[in-house]
Image (cartoon, chains in turn cyan, purple):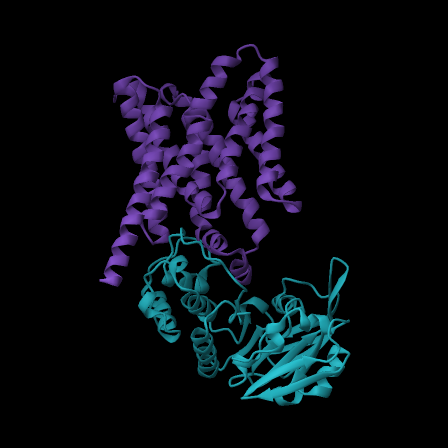
Length: 273
Length: 270
């Protein structure tokens, strides 16, 4: 029997959507408190993997085991690129409150205990200053904080974030990563965060799930991001170059087979500031 | 204005206006305005069919709004929701043309269904309208939080175990109930005005979700009460005032929102 001590175990999961194989026997486990980056080019199956963990997508084979069962009660989720309508009459604190009890019936009552929880959560993500503002009128970075607070207020054991760093300016990217790192330690929470560029995560993450061709290489960052490991994953020669504390992944055979996956997303390959 | 034969008018108009304001809040938030237009219009052939068969028009209206919900949700699975809504509306209106051609008293009845006969409500009409309205009012209040979260983002709602597909169908069902109750009283066009005008104004006037829904109901009541009073005073149709006041409320809401925004900008820059 496989050891199931982790918070999340993805066991040989394959997913096909409308006849196309998106994930191919992806297999990894996250132990409690891990801060893990889900890395891959656009279209490599990151969102599908997160949606499979959430139970929105049923795997064609394999299974996802969440420690303690009751999947959605244990997972906080920040979806990709949500567009919050500026016309919706909703303050930041209302959105955070819905994270607590948005699935319940009846009107949200102004209970003191609820207000305290919401205030504490707003404080924890640094959203107190815009708590009374409309969520749709916040900046991208502020909306991201509001959505993180929405996902965290029920204190999930596992937090999934889908490309939370996309569409943010450089300062907000750094702030979001350090905020997540701090919250993960504070709440003793496991984090799985998808991104096409691993560099902003390098100071924070202690493990990596690298997706390419539907397959995954997983482990500690320094063990996975190596030429021979990624060459095996991509099915061709890949060089890993470290420059000024950043990592560049460069495929040798440009324009054919798997390497086109990287070529089409140059931001994934070369990120020299 | 408060003569005994008008008591029913005030009661029914109040029930219908409050319900339309509350349900309309989610129509506007969810972007269901086209469905809110299509459902009342698509139900009125149901009333024609009912009068052809000699049964209570409410049965015809409920049946046809049910057909509308099935059409919108089933056709909408494959493609874009507005196309599904338009197709359902066209099919129902086609049936309406057929039923009206079979009936020989259609012009008077059609006019009443389109523009309402709120000034001629009998006490018999009140009970079914009140029951159906209270049911849709109760359902909307009960589902307030899931509906709100789904309106913000269906995916966030799914992550809180609120299924998107079922929420859509459930809300269309609530809208169909509201519509069926209101059409015989205030007419097709007025149901539509009441579910769009007051809520659009309310969401601009406040940032609080529950407050906006209550304000929407309040504005809807004011619109209807003022319209009936003006209609009685001036002898013009109620529909003219409901449509006009609804649009006016929306316009004032927009002006207010712009004013607040520009004041905030000045405060930030100054």
